[in-house]
Amino acid sequence: MGVVIATRDRADRLAVTLERLTALPERPPILVVDNASADGTARMVADRFPGVGLLRLPANRGALARNDGVRALGVRYVAFSDDDSWWQPGSLARAAGLLDADPRLGLLAARTLVAPDGTPDPVNAALAGSPLPRLPGLPGPPVLGFLGCAAIARRSAFLAAGGYHPLLFFGAEETLLAYDLTAAGWLACYAPQVTAVHHPAPGSRPGRAALLRRNQLLTAWLRRPLPVALRDTWRLARRAPSDPAALRALGEVASRLPGALRHRRPLPAAVERAARLLEASGG
Image (cartoon, rainbow, N blue to C red):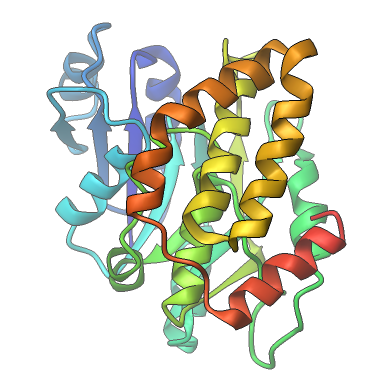
């Protein structure tokens, strides 16, 4: 089991995360993938955490930095942290045991607590309440989504599914990967026995709402049936005149749509039925 962290220009927050991870009793190998930071991130890692691996990218690759980290870190299982998240002691060992016990599992979506108070993230209830049919032997319900900073993947499954898609770059990129893992025959499930801690900075990142809407719509064009992609496009277009985030998202989708059509690969029927079941339940 190893840990991959993608980061950019958040050296102070990354230092806190590395202090937590390097103190774990499991002592996993850790690889920081630096998305061309300009704030001294690489120097901080080298000076303060000499036992931590460092991969410096020449340009910001967004979520694709995680793909680079998985390829570079030759371990069987990869736990993902962001520069503001870490794993509770014992969680990585429990995750490895779950993955060892069931070769069907391609990804575990962990329970997430929000620091500093340890409040359960609302995503936990959504994952625990997944309407997808339960399968015997799994540590939790099957899911078609997860938090990128609270997931553990089987390296072979992650690479076989193609990792994170280059068209999305960053923001709501996890759903597409969950689709692709499931379409490739792997299972993703919620594993409340495994716990990540997330300590996000206060406030929201500028433009994040537009990024999320853009990538949700691009995911529909990449994997969902044409009527679904057209429906979602119409819904976003109706909001655009009065919603700046929707307008920006729509413009960015338009510029990326040719790429989405080139890489379009509709989901297998069983996975599409699961996606529709989630939609019907509000998930």
